[in-house]
Amino acid sequence: MEFDFSPVIEYFPTLVQGVGVTLLIGLAVAVMSIVGGQIVAVISLYTRRVVSWPLRFFIWLFMTTPLLLQLYFLYFGLGELILIPAIVVGILGLGFHYMAYNADIFVATIRSVSDGQYEASRSLGFGHIRTLIYIILPQAFYRALPQLSNNMIIMVKDISVLSAIGIGELVYVSQYAISVTFRPFEFYITIAVIYYLINLMMEAGQSWIERRAAYRR
Amino acid sequence: MDFNLMIDITPLLIKAAWVTVDISARALFLGLFIAAALVALRTSRLAPPRWLARAYISVVRGTPYFVQLLLVFYGGPAIGLRLDPFACGVMVGAFNIGAYISEAMRGAIESVDSGQNEASRSLGFGRLATLQHIILPQAAGLMIRSIGVLAIILVKNSSLVSIISVVELTYQAQRLIGSTYKPLEVFTLSALMYIVIIYAVMGMIEFLYRRATRYTYR
Image (cartoon, rainbow over all chains, first blue to last red; front, side, top):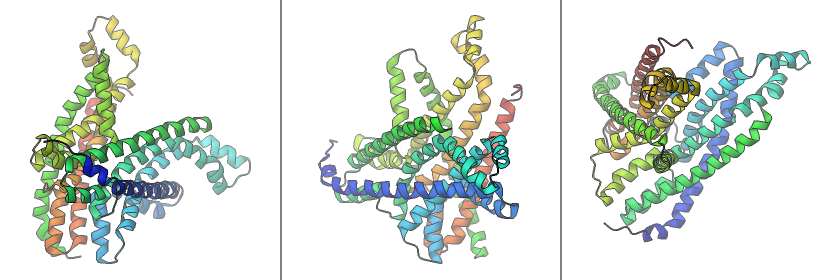
């Protein structure tokens, strides 16, 4: 069997389009999961059990079931009740999944900021909410950065799963190209390399963020 | 919610859940050996084996599991690698999780104070004897915890082998939806089964952790 990469070159613009969709979804999910994770963490730490326990149940539910099943559930299961476009389901599904993981990290880092910080801030006249916003959360956020960026690297790879519900990201467009050209090996090798390059860039970004964050802890 | 349907399909889903457990257990078993070999290569005194292991771990952790599955299953035949779906799921799962586990093992071993190693060596233990009697018992607790997290990820990732047509829990659920048109019921039931499996895994991790840390006071 000889390898022929000319179909890959022919379909390269399509693959680039797929990379674009992958990166856009990644950005949307990153913003949603980090902001949402922060909110979920604060609510589950600082409110009464009536509010925080359902949220903890939500985190637990997303952490104990596979992503693919969650996507199917949201797309086909809820699709029975209301029809949501695949791209919205994909972003929400992945967003909720990683929101749960990020919330878990934020809970741990908020707890790791010492009680002395809270007491000092209150005794200087900050209110409870202001103490949280100006003193506790910024410190917790910088401590969470290494693990957050780790999660985001894993998340970008999980975007490939969204092809199962028909979103035109990198894997989906290459599956289409394969069905036309019958060259699975060449295309899958190519997208593996593309993912690896994206990953290398994200790892470089991670170490940059970590160096910056080290000043502010 | 159609409860009669849920009761009817339970035996089928339990059978499929067993396939999920089977494929994950085999992949974990093989993956542990692959991880041990990778750790041996990474801590080798020669440079080329170290580079080889680092490159392997970096590539496997840098590409999606989903793409690895597709590459081996659909691309494998092009280089003469023909596997049936179940075997392919086990192999890719093992080689994937092996890379992650090797990092967990190395981390646990390195977490043991280097003075322990030096003291043991100066008392006349060899490299292997030191590892076996001094380092590993102290690293075991942390190692079991971090491998346990990876085992849970492995079980959840096994849903992806449905894409190469292994009839495990997720694939069976999809088939049942194809014949019953009741996605909500079927997916709820299969989610419950995943939760049961993962709870069992968590219980086993806890048991092994307690056993491994019986004699350590930390």
